[in-house]
Image (cartoon, rainbow over all chains, first blue to last red; front, side, top):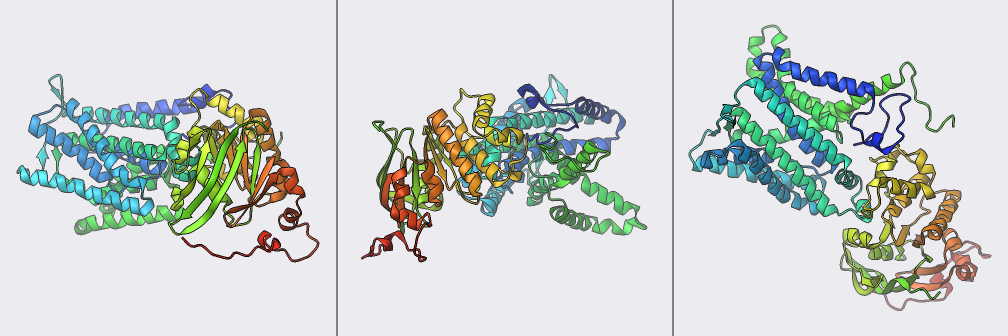
Length: 360
Length: 267
């Protein structure tokens, strides 16, 4: 993790343990705790609609975090993310339908399938870069979705595969509140895994590769291995997110995994802020809630009923406009805005930070 | 002088895109603990030679087609760069030598370092030669000045604990006073760690001040070699590279020698 600047004035680190601590100041710990309490209280205050939104956000967060590892940190562009989610969802669906497998089998299986696909998705990255790599992952996206569609039509599930709720000790998880906590824990676990990976040698190697492959290679980093590892880990996480999605919706269908979904995930990490896990989370929240915001905004207009027909189109258009605006005016994304706010209050009421090293 | 050669390059030939011969039969030998300078103008084959040693030819679609590179008794030509680094050869590239999106400390912890060294060891090693980096510890490397970047690049290479340090164009884009200081650090590194160093340079003066031995390349061949002090005093070097000429027209080393190429080779 990048810890470029202290988060509070007058706070200096004096040993390595402090460097490695997850939270560094009392304020950080306090705000984290407050946030956790808020998250825990949310399902008891919210309606079913908002509960569903929160669950969608958590699922998106897992997907966005995994894509952030790959694109935001290791610098490998992928347009095949929806394909990986589909692979996870279909693994869960097929195993459930064909073998009646319980979720504690299907989830690891989805991760394994994701990891395998990660190698396949990753192999072109050893040769290709940038746009070319994006196109090759796009091709694989279509292969996966095609295979899923073939399974659906061959087995007669033309409208999609139904999946029963996962059961733990005879108790089926159907309640929205329980789902909320299950997905919250899954998202939090993913976040912790990501944080730890990025603080390790692996994370540094990824960021080094993103910065300069040649230099990374010159400094003894095995680029091919770390690139593949990035694809494997990211794909496994995405596949698990896909499987969770399948269980949450009780339903798997290729229609859910269109190219637009891939674009949405790319949008999440761009809008959120490249190279930041917080950015992935903010992006997941933003992109998931955005259509609902637009819908709510349209509802406020006079004679809202007449707009109902164009809602879909307006949504797409507004989404595109927001993407362009972010790329133009806030390339660092939501996280960039957040950091500016932080820095403002870090020095408040002063306007500028002193030149480093001055006064020594 | 009786030390065995750490690195031997023999009759090296490198071909780019299977068509253009950049290096035609260069031989050099670097003994343990030496600082060796490879000099020459643009296109002389210096960087290509360095890339052949460090394994970076593949990236530019070039390969060693003849001759050998031997390091510590092992043949290393056409091996993977990271493999070569692990064998004990670290390269400081010409441009783009640090990770601009990582902080200084992250730059220092990113390289492959032998497992028995921890973060603290690596930092201590880096600051031993470049104390300035300690002050910049948590600054993003993209914000460093050219000289500071070069320090960071050298320090990151040292973290790999190389036996042989290859430095490509240390002086590129740096003020002479900074170059002098960095050259002095190279001497210090050799003195305190016993690292063998090969510098590739266009500015012959700076390199020959610290080098024990030097090779002058032109058109992919070694045209002159000798001990640092002797090369420094050599008339042609003075005229061509150090600019200490009485006449105003500067000529290529080869035309100085009235050398005429009878044949041109393509392929």
